[in-house]
Structure formats: structure tokens, C-alpha cells
Image (cartoon, rainbow, N blue to C red; front, side, top):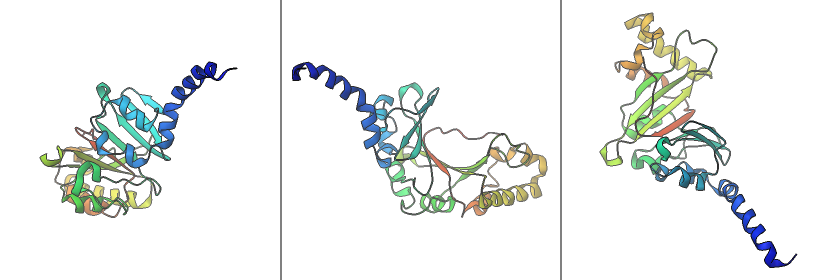
Length: 222
């Protein structure tokens, strides 16, 4: 076969492989980056690669072994979530600038509170009588000032290890002492900010398992 005849075939193979190449070459810092918020989903995927799973407007990607989830309602990326692990660390500086905790240190509730100055609003999927259908999480929400576009940071700790479970127990016990058991069972704490300082004190040393950044972030209700 002549070289000229091979050109269409080679071109087709190159085009077909482009998403795979993009996914292989992308770094975590390139994809989980403040510059990606507000971009077109097609542009985002030209860097992140093809989504592994999609559910409505929510798409999940694997970048350097790390799981990133993008909410792209209307075809525009509005928020990004990164599942954290020792190998998958969050650098928030491209999102919130000087409000970001040091990127080379473990991300904890205390670190986020110290770097941002707070306040942190605390929420939970469930603290009492949660059942076994899923592993609940505790969340802390911070909203930045106008200077950074009121960008929100939602960190979460899944209640699966001893430190997180112990912290949730301390928070729950203190609320029951003042408000009664039904207040906790019915998740009323999600709509009242008076127990946020107690939650912060309880969760300060707890490692964060995921972080979501964007605007108008969803959080548990009451």
C-alpha cells in the first residue's frame, strides 16, 4: 500500500485517539483548577479526557489516579469535586488564592478555617439512626468574599474512621444536651448555625475526604 493511501487511515486513528491522549497527559493540577470553572464542558474534556461515568449533568473523570467530578449544568462547568487520598491532594490556590491552605499539608477542617478565617457552616447527612444504606458525611461550607467571586468551598469527612465518628459523636452529644434528641434525629442542626463552633472544635483534626468548589453548592437540608 502506498504511503499516500495510508494517510486517511492514520489521520482517523490520530483523531480517534485524541481524548485518550488528553486523558493520559493531563495532570491533576491542570484539571482540578480554578481556570476550569465556567468553561465549556467540551473544553474541559479536551483536558480531562472522556468521562468514565455520567449521571445527568454530573460527570466523573479519572486523572492521575484521582477521581474528579464535574457538574456541568447547561454544558458549563459550575463546580468541581476531588476525592482526597494520600496520593490525591487538593491545591485550592487556583480557586481561592491566598485563602487556600498550604498545598503541601493534609487538608483538615482546622487548616481550612485557619487559612480562610472562617466562618465554616457545618452540615451532615445524618448523625443518629442513619441505617446501613450508605456512609453519611459531615460537611463544612465556606463562602469567599466578592474579591474571589463569592466562590464556595465545601469539604466533607465521611463517617467511616474512628476520628470522624468520634468527632460526630461529640457534636451530636452537645446538641442533644441543649436541644434534645429529636433535634439531632431530624437533622435540625442543618438549619441552625448556633452549633457550628462546637462542630469546628470537634472536627478540627479530622482529615477531609473530599472537597467541592464552585458556586451555589448543594448541602444537606433539615
